[in-house]
Image 1 (cartoon, rainbow, N blue to C red):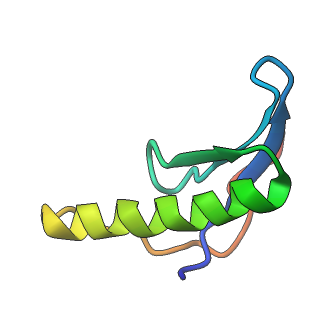
Image 2 (cartoon, rainbow, N blue to C red):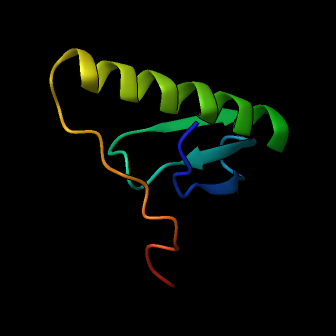
Image 3 (cartoon, rainbow, N blue to C red):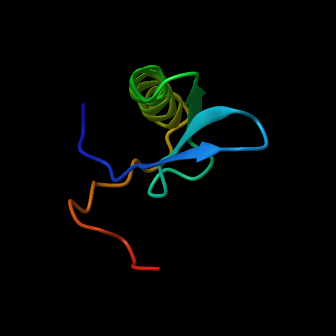
Length: 70
């Protein structure tokens, strides 16, 4: 799997862990545990890339660094 930056956080509202992949617009996953959320994120990344390639869209190269600081 490519090494895209991920953001993992707890959603108090939804009571689940959420993972966002900022370099792949709209690519997100969730799970009841951190491990499950990360596993689901790996699958979401794979599906995002497969779909982009299927439609001839550009697949961003992972930057390999933090995108921004908050």
